[in-house]
Length: 124
Length: 453
Image (cartoon, rainbow over all chains, first blue to last red; front, side, top):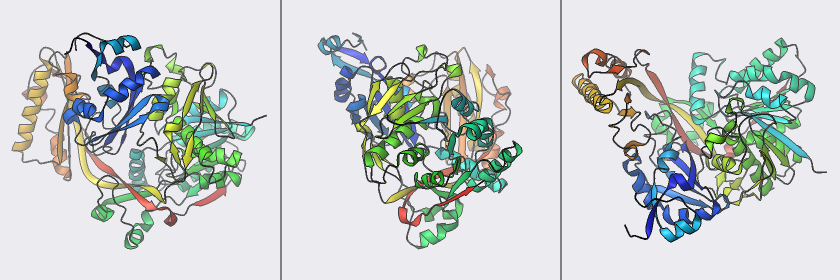
């Protein structure tokens, strides 16, 4: 990694809540401070989230922006093994997809993380 | 002076706290108590109960809830709105009347019953008339599972509940009305919001969305700062204090636990959210990107600025159909090498199922304690001190699922070592009642309101 980049854990800059709609899980990602929201908008792309979840979801990822709540809403299609009563999963209703999301680690310029007061790590 | 209507949430789903309704009416002044008993899965559970007994099919906890709040209804005029009727609102109201009479208040409480959401008796007629009731996710027409359909209910809006209130109902029981309608209806009734006052109606929906999951907006299941949330043992359920312009404050009664905060309310706002620009309900489409939240003193969050627009010509329909059988069983493996042992047990069990010639639509193995909920993101689980091997099967053939349930316990003696946690015995075979969401032309659904005492 470039020496002026640092790792920022989503866990340290956001809180989340998730739920279900059929076989789709939704996951809201809320910046802990409004000034961190633009970093989420820039870094937490649908591609990044799809790559993070990998084969945990079988469909696509949609993203919606809620600048008023400094939050992003993700729709993870095919995340619940059929969903509802069909699903055999422990988390059939996607309640803790929220915390799986928080395992994501962003790579952010050191200057920016420092200026915004974000907790960061030199190593992933 | 501006008039404020206080709507209190006393139930977030069927199975929620039995004491919350009473605490909400006794903890301070409230005008309305809303009780949400229905989730997508709940309708199918209720349908199963109605099949066994035609006088069932509603949320029975609701009767006890009303008994516990009767003094507030009779003496202080608190009104109650609940979708506890499930798939049998008339039976629910009958049971309620008998409980009220038994409590010595016979003839004193007017009950409004909203029906018309039940489309099951009309389903063939509707299909014949060209309503395909296509599955909203897969696009398949309902005719593909018609013979297995158990229930079909349209999600109805606030209008019939408003009518019941206008006819003097003190308790309104509905079937599959939307969760948000339970909060919206009293606001429309009190403030006389017109059917095209989109912004106010949208505000009513947002208030409803914040209240519909009970304490989930007042500190329960709140990830933000969870360690510091005080006294969840006596958590206060949320209350919306609404003004006629649609702005409102979310709060809770004094001397209760939990927390009402901007981050906590935000978590509830994004819960089960789809496209935030268009939160579609039968009454209005609310724009969640317009919501403004502000801290308004301790345990008070002000919500304002909400906008909305006309709804769609459709109602969502919740259909339940039989979809085979399932069973889930588990065993616990301990250190050392707990994960490896659990994985070996999984391979052995699957081999035996294969040799028995059993086939299923789905077999799912999970390793609870290692990676059941986070999958590969949680690592490989090799350091887990104990792992629950949890395996489930689902298929059309009941006998195959039944046979599966007999193959787990033997592993205790004839599988990998360090195994325990099978005291629950053989897993139960459950019939799967699946959910089929569809849309229907609003005009074909007509609701009825009856007020009785």
